[in-house]
Length: 403
Image (cartoon, rainbow, N blue to C red; front, side, top):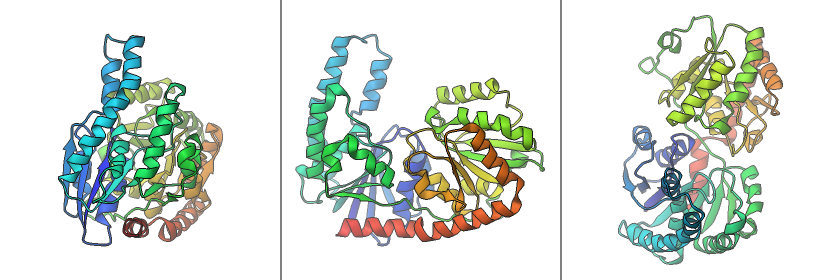
């Protein structure tokens, strides 16, 4: 069977991990083709992570993201131009549905999977899903969305309502990664009522660190050997909670002065600069190291005392929490989105309300108590084996695609 996976993405991170995990652990010898926007910053990451053949095809179709960037930098910021864009885009969308249908038909797929960051998410994801209305040879696509759905703006409710009706008819299943995110479909009543909704928890592979891949982060960053490593793995988007974490860190260093916080992830230059300004604002340059996206996440986790997930909003699942579980690293996370479905207090870590002082107290507790830290980490690993393995996730998608 030939399976086409389609995505549109402008950040390198969890969605790339999901796609490569799905392909690498697929329980059959099916052929995969991945189509994504040519300017996705994670294409090289995907290529490095793939362990089985997969043809990657970049596409150059019109996306809302690129149009919005052009508009943002344009001198044509007038209400007339904005109205033309807001409503003219739907005409462009219908034209692109036809073009996408023809584009994918040439690949002769047996099934199509669309995986989107959110809903509606990247507009090309929805357009490819709508190809199911016109082309039956590859069946109805499976549509997967990973973040909370957005409500339609007041001036787009009618066309968005129509699009939702068409999408529900076009797809075979509407899958998301947590019950929290599924509940957020209340913003989209047509989809909320659909019998095609399904939740499949993300799964992840175990990547052991060998002597050949081990690299001392203490040596790399010139960190004293007696410093305990706190790790944050996230993009540099504001919603990920860097400022919240720095507020907590101010309290942590008073009780545990021998700590270093390592932040690693993808970020555009302006996002990185904003976080760097926050480090200076809270006078934490002695404790904080800001790194780019890293391919050696298992290596970093192996050397960390704990992982922190200070997200403030739109955290549908928290895949990085499961990554920490695989390496028996406890997690302290905010009580946001679908994270409480992954982390239960004492089983893999602790979930804390959006209070930086409470967040700091949990971190101090784990850093100061080796027995508790090890016990929580071991229980988290057992949760991973029961609920969040790549094998379990891929089998669920395999059966869904073949049902």
